[in-house]
Image (cartoon, rainbow, N blue to C red; front, side, top):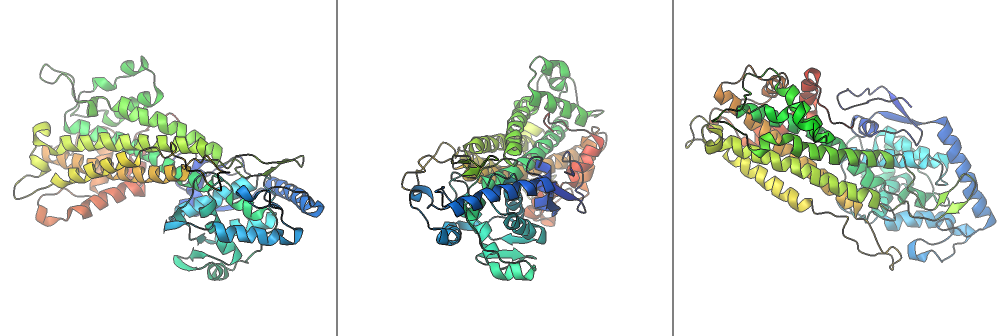
Length: 527
């Protein structure tokens, strides 16, 4: 397998091809395919495994052995036998009825991640699907045919049944799909891309939809974005530290080696590197003994989120290379009916991810308040030279407060809830897809707050005349930010939401972080 990216600092090579083998897909590879449209191919060894697995299913059908999902009903209907003649119709019926999603469609990058992860799971050779059927889904991905998948409707156990059924519909000439940015019927989208409609065979519908793929895809992208958020929060905090002429001693190595939490150590090291050679970082004096927690305790606060997200990343990378189908077909031909479709192993981590990202937003919002509050910053109220006539950054803090308050509601763990389904056969479910979706929303909200902090910190630095002489990393960050977002002199010159959107786009695009990391290495302790 050709590895495209080892970390988040490198550019994506769009001309490269990822060879899928079912075992070595990385989080960065998922992002390369989902957001940068890198093409994929199936490894020859994986093709052999798929073919071998399918032969076992064909033999089961021919021998009329009773096997769940092959020639039986589904869920609580598992005791209803299906004739050999109806096994094909059974699979199509499954997709037609299980496509019961609701709400806005998943974004293109999430849909692409879903398709990729499902292919990577199926090619491990434990699902009994035909190679040609898997290749049809991969062809859709490579051609840019993106099924219309409503984001709501999955319990995260028995897999992501409803959203994955929507993924399959266009393959059958049903449902809806996007092609070149236009929404068509599934049949039209496939035709425009020059792809063939297929007919499912025994077990194939179940193989497609019985798994944790959707919650895994959403959570994987949320995790990737959270990793970038962690780095951005260190940059934002370092800029705020310089605005307040912060004290350097809380970031010294000796303080943190005696409490060797890896995220804490990494954050302290990042702040030291960012503020290195700064003219505005100070030592403690009788008049300035300690900084407030949001500045002084960045290693402990940011570091805790780093440790949490490290745990989540580990779980994500296990899952994107796992078989989450049911039943599975072993190499020896045994059929095992189990529960690998259950999302609990990821539901709890994604709740954890949401909490970790929410804390980054929380601490950043408090630093925004310190920047705009004249009693705390010793700067003009709301970071404008002429407060009164100008409101400046007053409402930016309100907006941040709204976002972090929303995050606190979203961070309520989804995994502690369960509603039995399917005539109580499926009597304990994970709600993992809800956990992943809310975690992604929390990351987005917190990124907006961090963007606001960087914008406010740069405004404050300008007011103080600190445009030069900043730290080794913070000077690069300030200069890069100012190339896109300008100092605000008068309210009449701007519409604040435009400025905030510019700041947010700077962070989302990734170039800002890349530029800083060209000059300063930012550690996370889990790359």
